[in-house]
Length: 79
Image 1 (cartoon, rainbow, N blue to C red):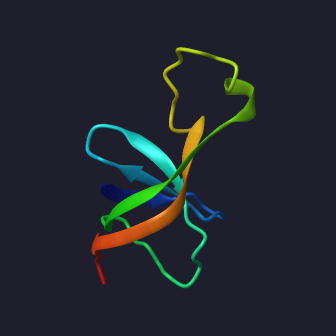
Image 2 (cartoon, rainbow, N blue to C red; image 1 turned 120 degrees about the horizontal axis):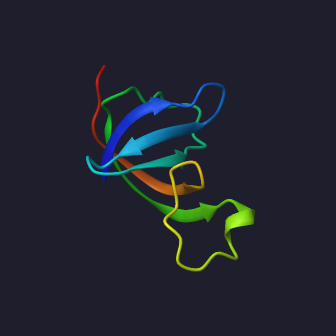
């Protein structure tokens, strides 16, 4: 659960923050517009950049992993 901070220009990717960390989420639904400050709860699959998969104990950055969202629930949205 977190707040959408921004959309990555030219993509279906958004930066989501839970207040302590940030992660990129990939949203396929082009019929919905998510604006900054939209609070959502997501579930999905964590995807890692292929060149990092062999690394065991590694602190991944927001650019090295993303969540491919399978389900999203909008908690609050700015209109």
